[in-house]
Image: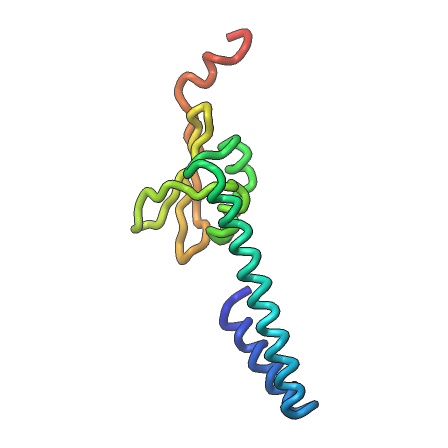
Length: 133
């Protein structure tokens, strides 16, 4: 959700609470807002705890990661998918990379904190290891 819309809904909830129930309604609306913010904070901490437990920039399968990526995803969503923090490649444009054991690598480019594009790079000798080749 857009942050502006979220804060506008919060202000609307406080105003509606005041109109309907006075200061009790304001307290109820503020309690709801604080509860929602705590849920978001807890979710973020859970994702970062999981990502912190695995090696930086490593994923079980780079191909599976790239198949789950979508334009517009937040960096937190990508970290949740990969279960790892990515290696930061550059600031302009903001880009991160994840690799797997085979040497395949996914590079994700972000624009304003959201995925704008990604590329999958496979090692040159990936086809030579296949049976029958």
